[in-house]
Image 1 (cartoon, rainbow, N blue to C red):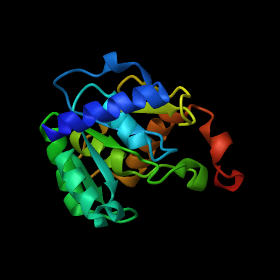
Image 2 (spheres, rainbow, N blue to C red):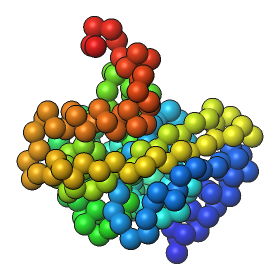
Image 3 (cartoon, rainbow, N blue to C red):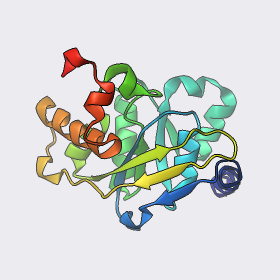
Length: 202
């Protein structure tokens, strides 16, 4: 009940303050698991994605946030769970696999931090690993907007990306890099390298 109330309140707030609208939610089937990957430029991205998406979802958030007692309580009531950035996190991986097994949506910001593509030129391989391990389709989401009061924010949901042909209990790094590349292109466009990646990395 708390989750429903919170989602409703934040949704109304975002509609009024940011005039949030969406395109492409018809790609999301009702009873199917998805890994939802979105770009990350603002602290508003998680609540906007959480409330704008019609289906219930689970979402990863950096472990540091959970040191705050209120956020810890709030997260546990709203399907948000911690992940350790930059290292293997067995517990968050188990949680993620269970979410997908239960035909739920798992939302991840694969840049790992705000404007991660600009900072390091690539996304993390976590979503790719989950896609290869489970065969779950990936829905790319592009969030556009300045998040200034009364300026429009728009979410574009892309067609699901199917990586089931790479399904494996132990996917190789080359496979994960390939999947991550396709996810990045789907979110940022074909020319993302020339916008964000340093020349020496090309």
